[in-house]
Length: 188
Image 1: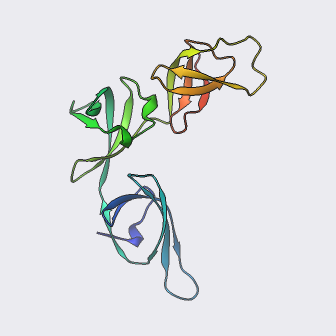
Image 2: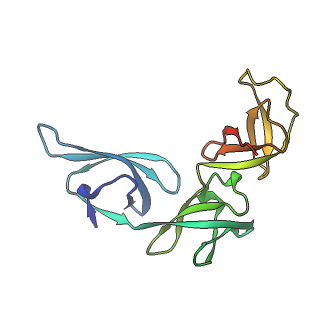
Image 3: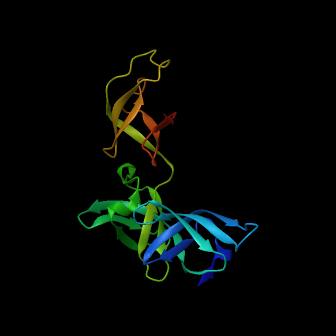
């Protein structure tokens, strides 16, 4: 058990059987009345943000979360299979729990957040940026660098992104896994 005095960003709480991460919190001590803590919580399962106010000193259920690195191996009908790089333990994770799953390629390292007592995976995150090869796009035209026009392109994982006109097939680009946007071209 923890109290509102123990709140910190990233802390995981069990509220009515659902897990929430603290995104931000603010301890408020008004001139009149008791102190309270205003929080923004992110639901682990749905990603929705919840605003909640707590009276100061209230006890809450803290969930112990461990961040573990895993390497992606393959996927099949049971889910996406990962291996811990040190212990070589293999786990299968449902694709709905992986943020940015469409940019996941074989051999990529991810960070899984695991409930320490039950050993269940809550979420799995890819790095913020990954380098992927363009497998299909319309040919680029020399000199098309001045405009902000974008064209569709398919990357090696099968995901479709929008890239500038000067990007060609077989170019390697950096992609933001959070929103699927083009970040830049990788010099080879």
